[in-house]
Length: 72
Image (tube, rainbow, N blue to C red; front, side):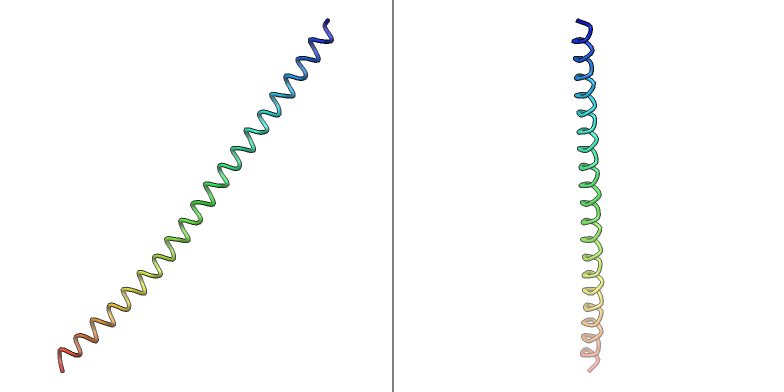
């Protein structure tokens, strides 16, 4: 009878260990996904910043050209 109880306890301990390992893996995946999302967002912001800088430069050129035309 004691042997059955010990086997049951051992099986329960193994199941709890496996559950903890699965929770750990799920947490790792969640963190990995969050990091990936933040990296993609940063890349997007940097691209947008480059576009905005280019647009501002182009508008400055346009304004200078308009000023030159108004002087003529």
